[in-house]
Image 1 (cartoon, one colour):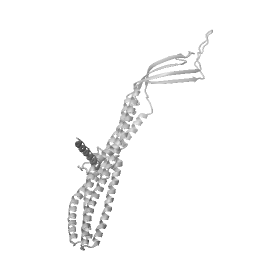
Image 2 (tube, one colour):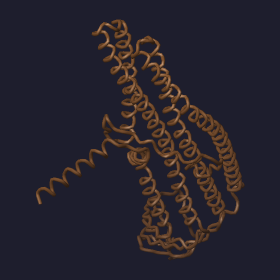
Image 3 (cartoon, helix red, strand yellow):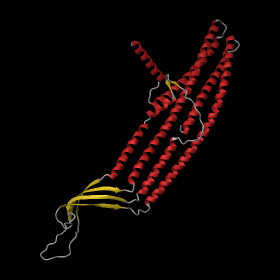
Length: 420
């Protein structure tokens, strides 16, 4: 039992280690999305919309208002007659009133429902703005990931070169010990190794810098020896950009304007409400009474703004112009993105051609370097000439790896530009 438990712990630790040392583009993109502060704003926007809709619904609930006032007026209503032995009551110039007013909306022409739909449309548009920012983050993460891949491959190729130089140096030193090789040959190799080590440090430092940026974007501490997997390229074709979040954002912003226009039009609709008022004051409803008294009244109120100097119509015309402006912005964005796709497609074709030729170039450079190595061993070629062939082969390998990575990046970036 203990052996099985120990084996399980070792396997679990190995799995964790593998997770820490192997990284994929999809993992980085998902981690960056989950870590991005604006992602949490989507939930906040949803909460705001929920509160706004809840607040809109209160329009159909009874509204209560407490009012109080005390006034003094210079004149009051008088009865312009006098009768013998009869004293007519006089209205007091100081008056007091406290009322409780209750209002219940019965018909609002659909204004409350239109407000709810407007708030929902606004919430969707604001949420889509966050998706636009997350899309930009996806582009940034992809670029950083492939930069790190290029630095990694450059470091690998340089490390292979250093290993070859060190093996060659060992044979040269053996020849020096036997008196068959000049010491300057070893010095040339030593200098070339130092130069290659400088290039290796530059490549490793470049990858480390890229991984530090990736750690910041993903919110995770990535291991220094993490291995990056080259993702599958897929295919890059077509000019349809309807999946871009910006296109959806323009569409949702247009929906917001449509809801605003609808709500503006409803502003001209008549409104009906019931009301009740209970009060205490002097005078009450009997204007000739001189004592404080309770009173109440109830009824139905009808409101219809039949003339407002064409305010609502002008407002709708303004919204219509804003819709046209958004449509032109969307068209310009689509055109600009399709232009970008055409350029990216040309870059993909160039890289495909370069990769095809790189394979042949590397094969030829390797043959030349192998012959040069044999000639150096036989003493018929100088180390200087061999180093020239070795550098040419290493640069050919680096170019091939770089072009392969750039081709995958170009295809993936093409699809990202389309909105995939």
